[in-house]
Amino acid sequence: MGMMKEFKDFAMKGNVVDMAVGIIIGAAFGKIIASFVGDVLMPPIGVLLGGMDFSAMAYTLKEAVGEAPAVTIGYGKFIQALVDFLIVAFAIFMAVKAMNNMKKKEEAAPAAPPAPSKEEVLLTDIRDLLKK
Image (cartoon, rainbow, N blue to C red; front, side, top):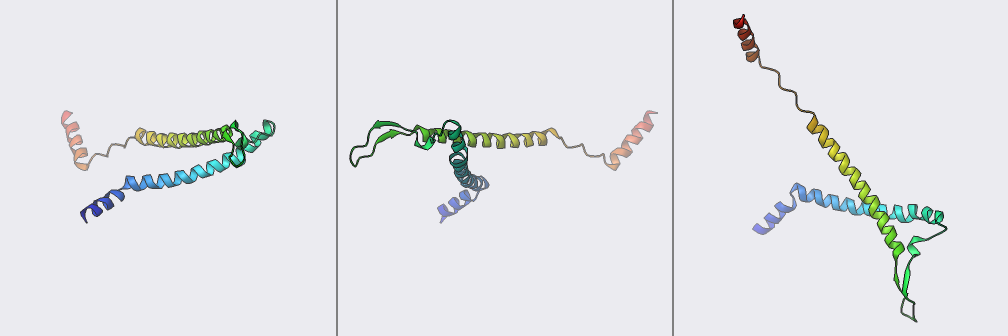
């Protein structure tokens, strides 16, 4: 049972759980971005470029013969994946930049020094009186 307890302790550490949540949210975010690019962004771009359908853009290496499908390089899908990546990378950049700005603001605001205690105030008054 010792190994199971060690595994449970490892799996329940804050960093591991945070990482798992981040991966799950990241996967969902990736699907949203893929849909945004494929269904919202690329069709108008295709219309602006003369009715191009990026997902159908491919270079044929070998034509289809009988039952065998054609061998193609789908560079249109690659262009969509590249746009997906750029949007996700920009969103992550903005999130990291916002977190770094928040950290800088926390570091820039030093805590005010604590007020002197009653004893320190009295000792300061006595010192000042003795100087006179």
